[in-house]
Length: 76
Image (cartoon, rainbow, N blue to C red):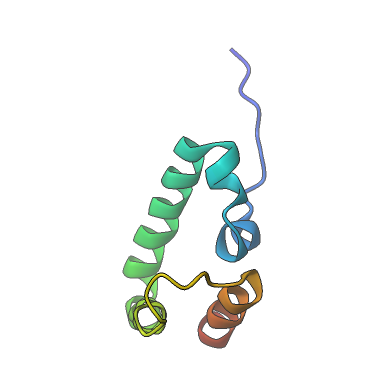
């Protein structure tokens, strides 16, 4: 059996929900992978990202740019 190798698209996952529309199982697995990795390797920064997300107005759609800005402010 030959398995196709694909490149992990972290930027796409961070900035939009396209993968959740195209392949929800892969999107969920990828999101879990990122969450686990960040909680293990960068727990303080991951907590900061989560706190930033929780401070947003509930049920307001967050733009792709806002998501990228939040990520870059913490992880770059």
